[in-house]
Length: 120
Image 1 (tube, one colour):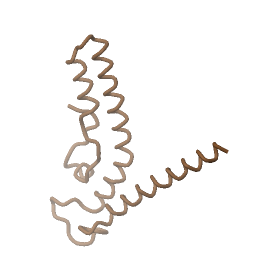
Image 2 (tube, one colour; image 1 turned 30 degrees about the horizontal axis):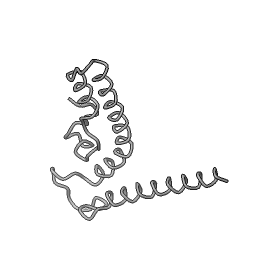
Image 3 (cartoon, rainbow, N blue to C red; image 1 turned 90 degrees about the vertical axis):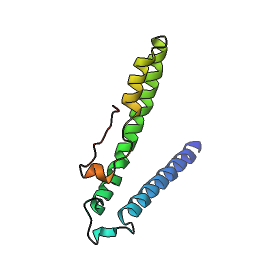
Image 4 (cartoon, helix red, strand yellow; image 1 turned 180 degrees about the vertical axis):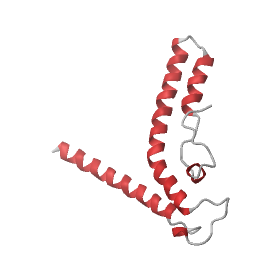
C-alpha cells in the first residue's frame, strides 16, 4: 500500500517535470521575437532554429554539467583535505569542474561562441 503511494507520487513528479520542460521549450521556440522563423534575421540575431536547438541541447547538457560540477567540487574539497590545505591543487580541480558553460546558447549552436564544459 505504501509502495503504490510512493510510485504514484513519483509518477506525478515526473509528469510535472515533463510538462514544465515542454512549456519552456514551446515558449522559447515560439517567442514573440521571431516565432516560427517568420521575418528576416540579422547577422547578430540568432535564428529561431538555433534558439530551439539551444533549448533542446541544454535539457541534456545542464544535468551533465551540474553532475560534473558537483562531483568536481567534492573532489576539490577532498583534495584540499588530503593534501593538508594545498589550495593550489584544490583550486585547479575546482576551476576545471565548476567553471564553464552551464547552458547552451544560440550563439554556441551557430558556432560564434565555444561551449566550455571544463573551465580554463
